[in-house]
Image (cartoon, rainbow, N blue to C red; front, top):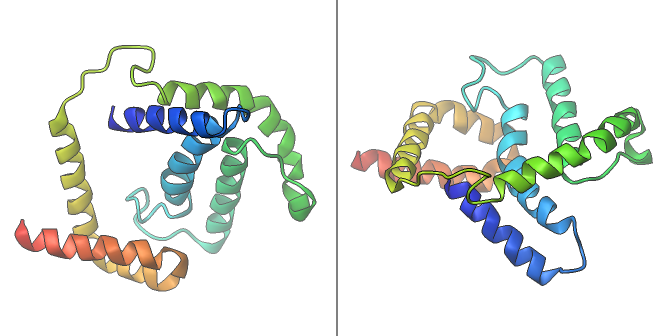
Length: 169
């Protein structure tokens, strides 16, 4: 429920700021959800406890391509000459665009088409679970951050929070 409220507010704000762009509300939500959450999980399944070990180089490359496809789909953009080898996916992107917009529309509605029971305690439990998972996987997180400089800034912040909160728990 918390994310739906956030996404609903985000759609409202970007819609007011850019009233002539019909896709901006979709790309604002999709950038947050896919770029920050889903695609990193696809590309780093071990970090999200979806695999016991890091994927092999071949599997990692395939996961990267899946993440690229997802990102283009949610951004409502086709592949161009820069990534000619991915252009064969453009027909899929065009065919799935409407379904993706409908999905983004549903997750950007605080009701989602149905009544949702909001309980503030759920957020605390979810954050506690994130803390516990990050604390349990601190060595792997540090290794991943050393290997991937693009995540270093946010990763260091996460580790600092884990360290401070872990000491209090």
